[in-house]
Image (cartoon, rainbow, N blue to C red; front, side, top):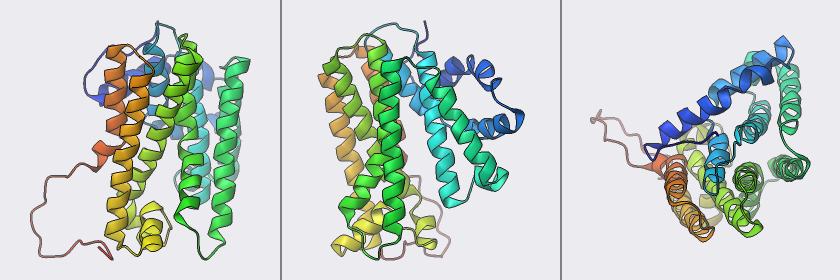
Length: 294
């Protein structure tokens, strides 16, 4: 049995998840050539393993199945997406290893992921990955347009950032014997959490995105509504709160075990709205740090 036996701070959930799937990593990585394994290990060191945690906790919500292999498969799939993100922005693994090695490692990760899933689950992951690919294709097209509306950006954000979290929750639930209805609610939970996290990611990266002229959600929201950039940031924070509330409603409707529901709720908050919690004010320095347009 592999589970996460705690209702403590979510960071402990992520640490125990890493330990649970970590026992399977040596055998999986041994299948890779040395150059490919180096890239994968570099990527795994940056992962927080929250995708794998969603699998484990979703399974725990309905039973005591050992789903560490499924959790590792979804973490591999998530790293596949992250490596492609590095290629798009030419940072991270791209800087460390170059495009060819990163592409090879991303392809290898798909093989590792699919090898750890049964046929029906392969189809669920494949649909999720096709959604991610579609999101990247749409994003490339939008980059070539002068004006892109907010609905298009939200569609791309959902395709790229919600599909794998939705699949992780659905597969974890199904592996533990959940009904189709219960798994569907967990899928919606994961879908909402993924998009809420994207809103928060864009809020936290706003300064850097503005400096590089990137059209992220708060920037596009501001441009489409005539708000300041600060207004776009606030809108994203509000959307994250609404998406979290909707996710938790789906969680309640699926009828999970109470202890597992507490853990999923805590993890959902930790990876979304808790990251936007007000920080302790710094001592005044006499210099303004106001965002442009705020």
